[in-house]
Image 1 (cartoon, helix red, strand yellow):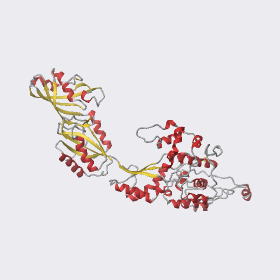
Image 2: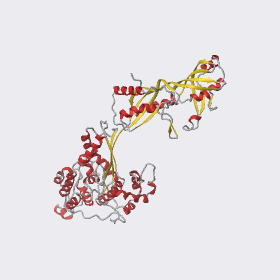
Image 3: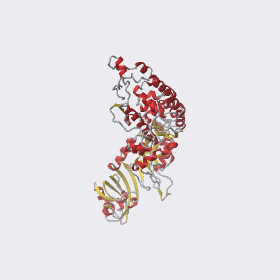
Image 4: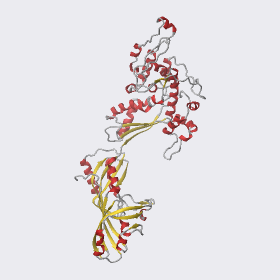
Length: 570
């Protein structure tokens, strides 16, 4: 909030004499009542308004530097704001030998009355602040600025606040064919705007110092904040939905100003450690790097390299991109895999695809088409090998659909989508297909190590066995294993010894060289290696327990005991 402390100027001796030797404060209430839309400005703002207008700053940036927090004021038409500022300057003229006034209508930003230390005299571009031309002629100041591009915002708070640009944004949104019930607006500004804002702040700070006031950088209304105050109501009206900071649908505009792109470059010499190359950045002069450098550079060094006030550009900013993006939608369910020749995810080795499809693709292809998403991310509670079936209630999975155009589905529509997936292939089936939140997916991941899984393995032995040779396996409970990372997954898993538990086993004799073993294990147990031993990397194993060579012929996952997602009445 602007300080409510009164700013009082000394009354000249002649007036004091006319008042009987006592100087009494006089407030021109009439002038304040006639400010119209400029009622948020007070007499102490007048020198700042004059100064900024004269140096090429637009009305909305002037309001920002005067710390005006009234959102509705920024929404006034540009020409009206210019006219109102002109009227403000005229109606608030005070005879210097008679002025004393109070500061009224404190806004949301802070301005402090202080006894500031005297700074250095104004110096030229080689050493600091430039001499500012006289601002006594307000008419000239206003008229000269009327058609100029703002030297601070580079036109962002000028042309890009007008109806034509709002309609252009909305046309882009509507043509993208998204489903949304609210929106959040974001903008990317060229980094040199921060440099120009710093120069303008130093200019205003010096002028306020002359008035016995101080202005901190944080007191100024941020350009992005002011722009959103203006643009939000217009976009909301045109799109027919409210602006909401928590909305998952984002409308973004990327601004650029090629004419002034090199204005940041002096900072790289002054603060080289702030500008580090990054693989995903086209330029080291990112907005955050520039802000970091501006926080570090000394004022006197800044003024040696950059004009204050900033020069007026010839051209407006350009809107490089108008983009729309919907927050991700998450779909979960459980899948059964009935094929022994189907990987869970695409099987690609050295750039060559080994099998034509995968569980992931058979499910996600239909979801991508219905949700009209750009891409997807598949995850599941564990994974089975290409030759392993998943039976029973299936394996929990979740798919993140990135930037979907369609986001609203009824329970019946999800049921129909599930049926479409199931009718498309005899290799998989899905159940309990439903929309879930990002947070809910964590429950699936939590179960990977904590829950149990049940398997059925068909085992072969080199030596003949009888039923009584394997019966003892049924009595083994909570068998602890030490499993070194299997050779077959060592290319994608770190080398480690993992302790796993076989909770129970139940044998089913078939013939002299075959039996089926039903196992309930800790999630994450390598079952194939438990059977054949993986050259001694898993201890104990079925081979060592039976004292003969054993191998696995078939493996089925019979249950994944993760109670997620919730079962549906399908």
